[in-house]
Image (cartoon, rainbow, N blue to C red; front, side, top):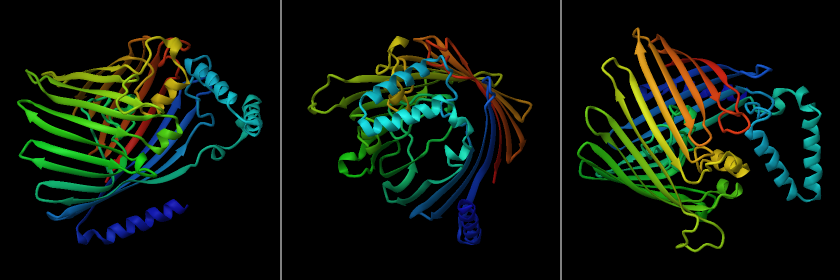
Length: 420
């Protein structure tokens, strides 16, 4: 209820401020989905996004995006994993590993928790016992100042480094879900200075604060252009409070990316990141644990308006044998250190617009090492210039016990988006 009151107050304030030059926009989205399990688990979600922008002429800009989300989720947070999947093995082995390090009090709580789930007591608990139904965040909250040859942004903002479509190894500011590659990147609390040198060259310096300066994340990116291609080089020092809690070491990253057109309107892009984790006891110059992640891809739109994209991702941090998948692989993936358990991936997409108001697309991501994939078909219909209807599905293929994607249940989703 408190969130509804906040939304009403916010909307009322903005409406009265319209005469002062504030621009208001956003959208409402409702999703219904069904996980194709024996129990046919269904979920629903409602999202409200309010975007406010106030331009201060040539001096700067104030921007705030408010996101209110209501979720009704399945009781079991691991419901998308099949019982005999590689994920069940990973979680089982991981829990035993965690249990080995518990003291007597923690062990008693652990045994009680495992017993609770073992006798299915949790089945009878309400949804609200597991998940907050309402959340509200400020996805953007920033002030942008314009100077003669530079822009300075302070606050929660969107940062998008890298040129990859499904995979972005040089972007440490966001955790990207390859199976939802079109979703916008979330806001990052940071200080952001971009200085321009001529028409095509710029220097971008970013610092994202932590609990102390040792836990700040910071880096720079130099971007320029030559011929038909934009390119950049970058360096990042990555250490965060969350990463330290999860056991991730400090990382030093050197990278580069490019994007442009080679010939006949064929687009080509790529990025590479050389990453050196610094574990406890390592010196600055130690490179024993260094690894590489890289992406390259191309796209083309045919004369009949069919769009095709292909992208290859190499992840030296991953494994090329499913037997090596473990709790560490899961932690590195969910923590954003890599975009999958394995070393080699291929993403392809076809898209076609027809009958003026319809768009059909087909995204496929394949784990080339364990030969599993996820197929994501989608059809959208423009019911009105401000209302979009979407129907899509995630179809997972591969051995459930030996592959990354085969271990998950398929699902279908219907959503309605209204823009204002």
